[in-house]
Length: 144
Image (cartoon, rainbow, N blue to C red; front, side, top):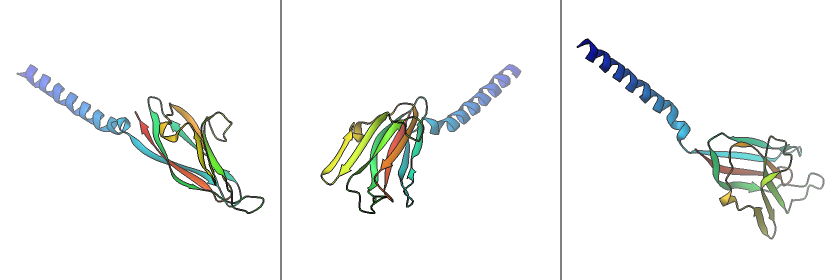
């Protein structure tokens, strides 16, 4: 009888521990929707933003949720073309774009298509080039 109680106690303890582990670890295995923004402030200082894709995860489902062109820092005139880049590595961006987007009066261009962008683990920098008080906001999903 003592042996049975001991086995029952160990089994119950193990079940509680595994259940707690599943609850604690659960969110790490779920998709996570994120947003990130970059721009140029009223003093014409660029604001670049970093984001990290952790090991074992990928960033997908990118979309532009806001894009607004600004004004020329020297002229004060509305910027007719602007854009943003996502580059690999820490900010400030050092080149090595993995994605770029340009918007002009005639339309927009990007490379690759934003809908097909898939970023593997690493650090990335979003930088905006579109004038004073201009900005871009992106949404994306981190997936295990």
